[in-house]
Image (cartoon, rainbow, N blue to C red; front, side):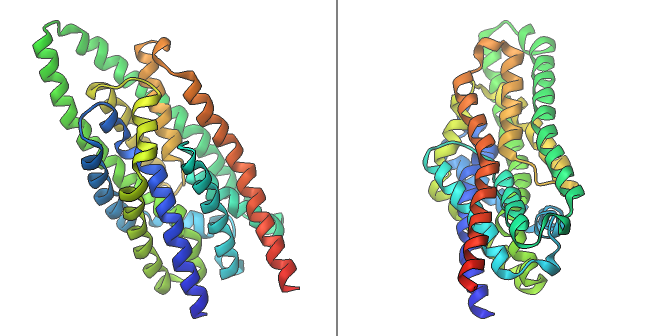
Amino acid sequence: MEWLLVIGVVISVYMAFNIAANDIGNSVGTTVGSGSLTLRKALIMGAVFEFFGAMYLGNNVIKTVGSGIINADILPATGAFIITLAAALWITITLIKKIPISGSDAIISAVFGYGLVAVGINNMNLNVLGLILTSWILSPLLGLLIGFFLYYLLKNAFLEKVKDIAVKGRLEKVFSYLQIGSSAFAALNVGAIDIAVATGVLYYAFGASAGLDIKLIGAIGIVMGIMVAGGRITDTIGRRITDLIPSRGFAAQISAASVIFLFATMGMPVSPTQTLVGTVIGVGLARGTQTIKLDVIKNIATTWIVTIPACIGISAGLAILLNFSLN
């Protein structure tokens, strides 16, 4: 059992590293894109708040990922390895290509792929799976709507009434501080999602005592991933979808953070990436459709769509391979 635990720790750190590098842009990307913080300062802030979010806010989401679809009583440690490794391998591929994807999509798809082969569809909780799929659809749409209406109200009721350029500059400075605060709030909630994606299945496979160690090590892996590789995706979220200034960045970030907080509280592993992209698009639409860079959105959406069958296939394939090798 000890060697299984060692392998579990290695996989959890590997997964945490990759998912954090992928997701940090959802916390601080708009802050960097609008110029409120430099990339390095934003990554440090994001790492600190994601660590605390992972350690203290992730329990509901961990429970859903770790035992909501496949009961922990019928999921062996080897199955937890396969699920986590399948998702981590896919995230690594997309990270290299600098495309922000959903770690939540990856891990839940991997759980389903393993379940099809190893436990059978009748032994999975399809009601929970349905709720998760619904949350995946609702979170970016809700983010888009909130982002649109929040910035629309800010722009028409407040920002456009200020004509003096110097006053506009000071106003944007105020929004830059507000945006830093909203990014910290977002990082707490993203940390709660990321720790569940990285360690949720392993946490329940080993039980609460060993799981707590995996959770802590996974949180450390999140910090490592942010600091070492987080800059790659942060640039995509912060600069490539639409042009941001602090007021727009604040509207996008606080909208996304609020939506993620809502679903994380309910234990739903929504995608921080999809949610924030939705809010950034909403803010862009409030400015005018010509400000949205559709080619970037198309590339991101394509990767999201491919993620689900890819992770189902990788996980199922690894499960079949393991079963074949044991027989």
